Length: 138
Image: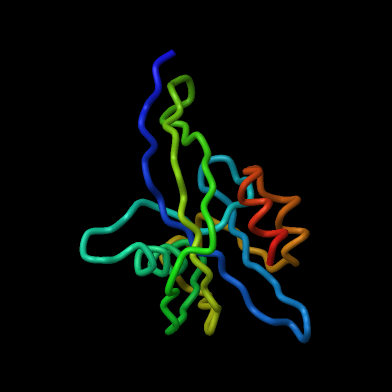
């Protein structure tokens, strides 16, 4: 069987404290409307953590001055290229992003919904098993 090399994406696991509890921010994907964390392709001129912060801004309106130092894990999934085509295997590095500000006006505000939930609830809302494990480990 033909194996395709994995592509790399970066993701922002946006979180905040609500009293003693931690909450994570999920957004809907533009295509299917399923719940995901902000993610995208590496960006020229930015390291992986910086690209994850940029995705958090564009997809969720998240601002943070704290650049994550290291990924807290990774997950893999098949990114579908078109309705009937092949999926591309993608490995996604996950960076923790402490939400300091949440803007109402951000680049993809009209294309996505966002929701604060507990890590356990978030794990039940996303589809990727390895991301579910990362969320349950928070």
